[in-house]
Image 1 (cartoon, rainbow, N blue to C red):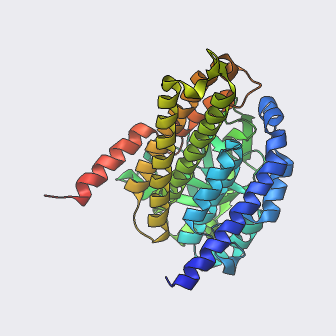
Image 2 (image 1 turned 30 degrees about the vertical axis):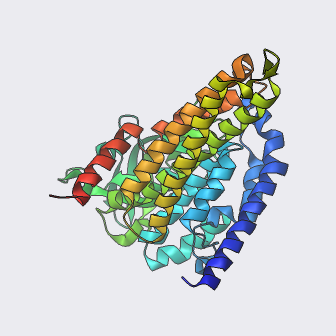
Length: 388
């Protein structure tokens, strides 16, 4: 990349991040406390994000998107998550769906869907998890049977982000339930809401509030055959696993944002709270905590950017994304807990941001593949990449 092109991209990134920060400062910060407490969906924020083009951030310009890099996208998510992590979730699921079509769809599918994804005329996410399976996606039981020019879908999905207010999803199904190995019978459909697509209930959650996370029940729901992503059955698991690399970079970026927000809250509070006549930041015990928190944030940020840069180069990055996701989300958990300790009773109060960060962080170690799974992926890739 030439120096001129690199400078132009840096300027573009700086302008975008500046616009995101202004949006967060003027639109999100004033409402986050009340909306989160009421578990209220931020409809106006979503409309403003549409106007900013954020739902098309990774979609190529020829399809109406911004064509940003995954690295810039990770920085956007980091900034958003430091203010309200739920808003980042509204974007992430949609971006993974759009990426699945952009990377794997037929040209006709790209031309038809990507411009509508970019404007968020069609907005949604990915429908993978089922009541009896999460991490083990090959165990899904939602079946799509071919019937003329349509697939007839029956089954259930749960913990689906954007499922109440969204209208289109990348739906993972079994087109051949008896295939061996199981992944050869799995396909990915572009599923717009219609008859038989039933959102049954919104799930109550400890944190990650304000965003619609629901159960879906499919009953003789029909999807036209031309909405089979890629046009060939049996590649659905491969397509969605590629998308989950991006999803894990997103969750890692969320971890960085939450960890950094906890750090900033702790740094600020430690300078105004006094004990024994001095600000608590002058006590060695607090200094040790702040130093650990700051080091976690920087290490998590570097791992996340490294994974995003590998994704941008088109390299396989499941190990890098797994490392980033694992470390950054654990950093979020640890920093949120330490920030609460530093704040004392005020950290436990709903009047402060700390208790929200403390409730939001646990989702990150579970979502997009548990951290236990990430360590298995890291170890397997480490061995595969270093044979003896």
